[in-house]
Image (tube, rainbow, N blue to C red; front, side):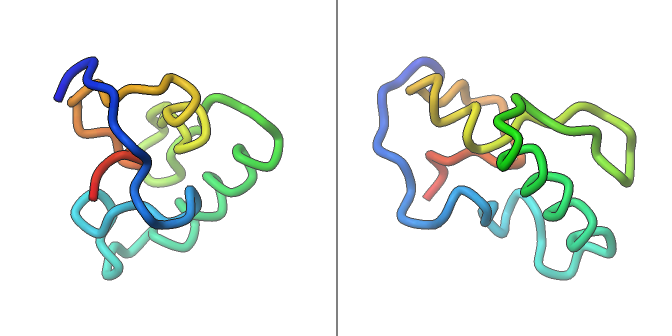
Length: 79
C-alpha cells in the first residue's frame, strides 16, 4: 500500500474508517471535534485530546495523493 496511488474512499473526510476510530471510542466526540477544527483551519493535524500525540488530518493525507500504509487514523484511502 505504501506510496500507491489510490482513489479516496467514498466517505466524508470528517469520518474516519471505523477500524481506525471505533464508534464506541470513549473520546470519539472530542477527537472528531479536534479533527474538524484542524480541517476547517487548513492545518496539517491536531493534538489528540486523549493522548496528546500529533495526528494528521484526512485533508492533509488526501493532498499527499498516496496512502503511506502506516495506519493513519484519518486515512482517506481506507475503504
